[in-house]
Image 1 (cartoon, rainbow, N blue to C red):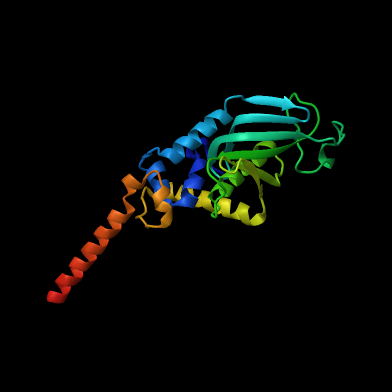
Image 2: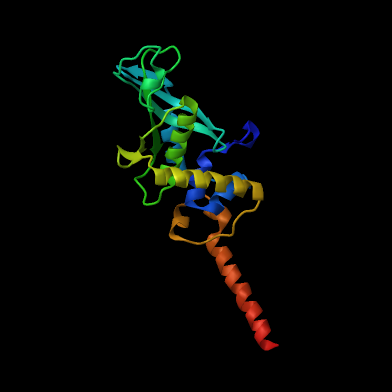
Amino acid sequence: MYSDEELLPLSGLQHLAFCPRQCALIHLERLWEENYLTASGRVMHEKTHSNQVETRGNVRTVRGLVLRSQKLGLYGVADVVEFHRSDLKTTSTDAVSYPPKLFRIAKLRGLWSAYPIEYKRGKAKTHNADKIQLCAQALCLEELFECSIEEGALFYGQDKRRTTVQFNAGLRKETEKLALEFHRLIDSQKTPPPSPEQRCKACSLIEECLPYVHNDAMEYWKKAVMDIESSQ
């Protein structure tokens, strides 16, 4: 279990899953450059957090819910968490009999389940970075409400629809592993070297990272060393 002083921002998991060097530049070197992609995402998040709580029938929508997990050592803010009231009838004496996904909320009647939703610009991605971030939110909620959460959703601005994410054993294990790697990266205080890939072109930190320039420079020095050694 981590102490409050050891908690790291949950968003770092997405950065780490996308690129370890980007994660280090943001969370170790404190660099951040906004481009069109990050600006669009920021506006979407601000709109999401504009109204904090809304109740319609048996669905209570909470925006900007603060999260933390002492087990994973993470803290953050959920874009949206939908709390769905169950039609299961219970009394105060049968708390142990209802399903683990249900729980009670102080000052609210009935039993509830949680459904986290993360908003992203663009469209669904081929990698798991967004799913890992959402899964980490679910794990925080499970710790907070002592429940189990089976699924959540990613809402992509370009597609304008929800993509359901199942929090299966594989995704949970990947999320927990990445949380541990995130702590190790921060503890190491070392920024990984660049690894130029196609993803670099959409990265907001490309001017700070300079992956292609660094790579060219490394190749130049390697060639220079080999030339010197061959001439001796």
